[in-house]
Length: 96
Image (tube, rainbow, N blue to C red):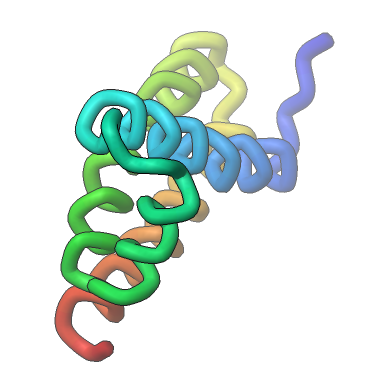
């Protein structure tokens, strides 16, 4: 099933950084409970920006896959989601 629609890319682009954040939790914050990890991210926006920016690298996997399969509209949706995350990271780091 080859779906070449930007909405699918947007959904994939939103989900993959969340998975990347879970991997980041397992690697970096192993000894703390997940609720404390989320509380730390909400309390300290600089930590949240750091974790989100590193978890955003997970979007490279589906972006490269869909680009190589020539499903450019889906890759465009992933890129749009990445840019939305980037705006959120800038806001977390410098504004809040």
